[in-house]
Length: 282
Image 1 (cartoon, rainbow, N blue to C red):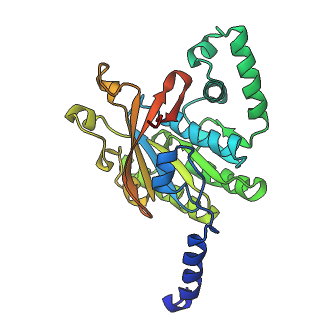
Image 2: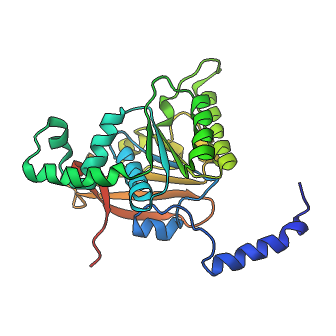
Image 3: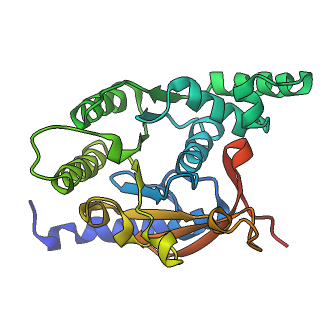
């Protein structure tokens, strides 16, 4: 506890250092326009990536994790509550190698594809990317394991895929339950000083109403909206309208940014490779 006046010198020093580029801007997502808007994922922040089912939430977060752990060698950990470690690894290999995910899953990989997979496997083997796919995991388990991996192994980013799959007894309502999980994730981010990225599903009201998703669409709890420092919402125009003139595009809506700008960034989706990509600049 301190008087605000006692923090002024430190605050001015931070402002000056930031202006000189001496302060870590956070973990980059790898998406140029998105990083320009949000300046990276920062320690102590809770980040939500939300979308309706099938929009590419997991592909998006795996892109961010690949950029961190493979390209930048930043230790990154994911708690996968939906997919097994094999399913996740298949998707990472598809994205990294540009071999069709369907071919990897079906085993229909030609000689050239095997060569690409081998090259990608070498990069993956050297990356500090940790997958926890334990079944029946609780939020208490996630917090305890995360603290160990941060303290002993230097993990710099934690991902939970996805929040609504967590279950526990003793809550009066599902809304109270999700609110408790949300606060636990925010507290974990602050205590460990790492970004905690939480995937969340939104309801289908936006699609039914023919509008873009918004924060009020987050399922089961307004606490997610309140606790998050950054909320990214995905919307693919061609998911509802196959003949859309924006086929192959996804809107990444920065719906909340407690420490910066909001707006919309357009990416290309390549979900046949289980990934997204920067739009080609003309």
